[in-house]
Length: 308
Image (cartoon, rainbow, N blue to C red):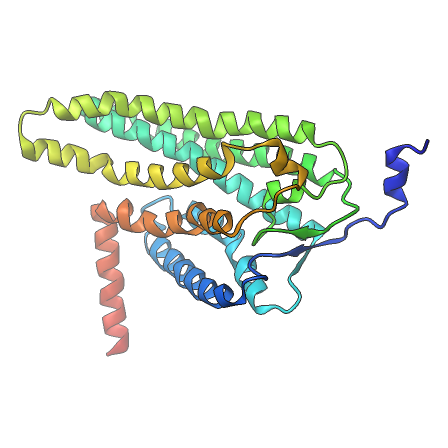
């Protein structure tokens, strides 16, 4: 009996992938293209304006790792991506996503200190803390991405090369492998626990202490100011983590076997954590910052002087 690995070598290996996207729904493609293009421009403009006074560089990197590819495939007649290009795209998306998860948990700690220990805030949230934490978040996200993508790209792909997604989404790619992916599944479960569940638990615990502290503030104005400090962060967390958990937390064996194709609704929902959250960040979080408002006023003033 011939060993399966020998059978794979007799088949042509995959050198490129076809991104299916919404190819079966041409009426939706034009609408979706314009919608995503508009949101991507808002992301670049909104986060670009405040990049000096906020960590918006992450949102720009996160969306730029996939959205330009996504938009170009709408215009191209041949919706393909090279094997290596697919690996690079997965690495960037995975790294940026994991990094943002960790940073959101650190922002929850920032809110906790600001509300529960306001007098010690300048001491606790100093450069000695947040600079190493920010750098560690980027490093951890990058290392995890290297591990996950290395395991995925070492698999043999010798059959179907059609990815039923807009981009090289790792779960959709794993479905195409003609080998056992149990190691990949275990690795991703561990990674999701570390970069999704642990930060989410940290955020939850932080707000368990934050909310009672806010409710104990005697004045209504004081409670409003305290809540507004963290309300934007909480909104971003709900949108970002909500869509990710909806997509990834309920993984089933059939999702990896390729028996059931990703539905259109699933693809549209994936847009939320890929585009909508980075687009809303400047509006619901950063625009509360006085420095950001000042930066926007300067940009608008410069624009008015330019058009005169």
